[in-house]
Image (tube, rainbow, N blue to C red; front, side):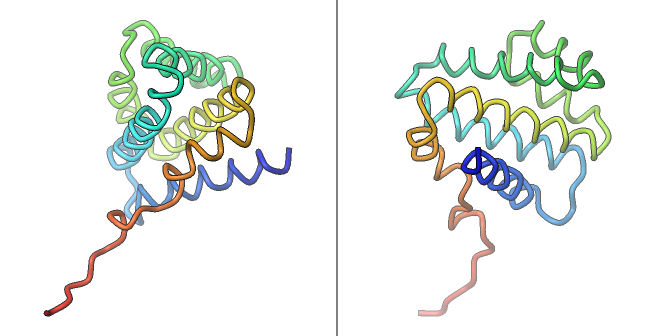
Length: 144
């Protein structure tokens, strides 16, 4: 369970890095959707597009089950059958609720994947998603 707690901390830190210092619901939604897209890219070759979609739907369902205040939002996304609808739902939330919803969803997603393919493979597949990439850091101009 310690490894899972460490991964949860990495998820939260990665999301905070992507959101940046001026966190509003729109930036939070963009960061969460970008994270989900990166996860999709990493996982689709392994579990397929349908597997990725099923993990997303199940993670969303678990969010609603464990956090009653998220039920209405989660049900609207599930009804649309489109992960893109998640962004529009997040933008409607308060900043704090959007961040909370995103963190819970990503942690549920990670935990589900861990139960399916194991913690070691999950960590390896998603390592690049959580670690800030060079393109996420401000670039510095270097004169030749």
